[in-house]
Image (cartoon, rainbow over all chains, first blue to last red; front, side, top):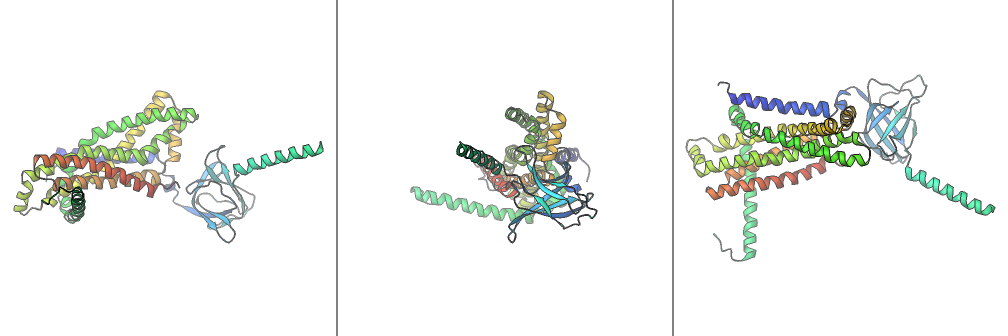
Amino acid sequence: MNRSVLDLWVGIFVAIGIGALLFLSLKVGNLSTANMSESYVLRAKFDNIGGLKVRGPVKSSGVVVGRITDIGFDSKTYEAVVTMNIDGRYRFPKDTFASVYTSGLLGEQYVGLDVGGEEKMLNPGDVIAKTQSAVVLEKLISQLVFSKASEGQEGQKQR
Amino acid sequence: MPDLSNPIRRLGHATIERIWRLGFATRFLFALLVLSGASFRRLHLTLREIFFSGVLSLLIIMVSGLFVGLVLGLQGYETLQRYGSTEALGVLVALSLTRELGPVVAALLFASRAGSSVTAEIGLMKTTEQLKAMDMMAVDPIARVVAPRFWGGVISMPLLAALFSAMGVLGGWLIGVVLIGVDEGAFWSQMQSSVDFRYDIWNGVIKSFVFGVAVSLIAVFEGYDSVPTAEGVSRAITRTVVTSALAILALDFVLTSFMFRGA
């Protein structure tokens, strides 16, 4: 069996194809989920997670330290349970505060970890005790409207 | 030939005919898979088909990918500009290419460029009784002719789709960054932070693999099942292109609803 020109062309074709795949995965996409090989799980319970989504980022000081892997509902406490995969390089103290933030006014929502001062660290699988729910825009607006309306009524009574 | 003067009878005849062909196609697929050992043991047969269906499709795939990317860049910029978020152009171009346009358009081009020629080749071999001659010489035509063409298409398709997407991203970059002047760093970094390898790129590869199987199977089956006349072969080629296009678009819907459930 001899090498032929045809083999060369097929080789070039396969090389270009694999090159395109590499380009897509390295330059276009991010392999960050793959290189987070050492990670551990933390859980947090929220009253309201707003528009939080699976695969959303977990940030601390604005740096992405993990990803949300699962969102569930605890039917005993009627709370949302958010499971997060945290990069193994980062550890957080016991009194870390987990909140649901929105990036920008209408951007995506993410879990922010605000670090406390405790010496002991959270272990893999721990549940973050202190959480703050998402700010629901409709609630804010309705509160504003109602408070304005009640102010107006009180003003009329006084007159 | 049954009496087909009655329209209801004709409808029934056509329906039974379709179901018959579907059953034959399924049996054909299994025979193909069982007999495809030879196309890997004698790899040069498959390599030759990769050359004819893959390498010779390179030009049309790369040029069309580039132009699709250029158009996406222009149209995307036009729309994003209204919301003042032109940096998201990279995300828009990359996501639409890797998730949908890359696999689908590359498969449509592949069906009309390579699928039709495979059908024509096998159909003409049948017409000139080369397949029967092989059978006489105890060479199974499915193992010798059909299976290498099938696997050549299946192997080529994901590579071509990835190439299409990569060229499209380059096209979008050319319009957005080089010509219009979107910030280059934001273009790439936003793209990288929103395109996920497993979720977006890998799903696109799976899609193009499925399309490759569908298009190759339709192409070899239509050729093998063609009526061995000049008219029959030309009809088979037409059916290859039409059926492949419908299959690609229908499968794309099914796969998309499985893969991207708005998570």
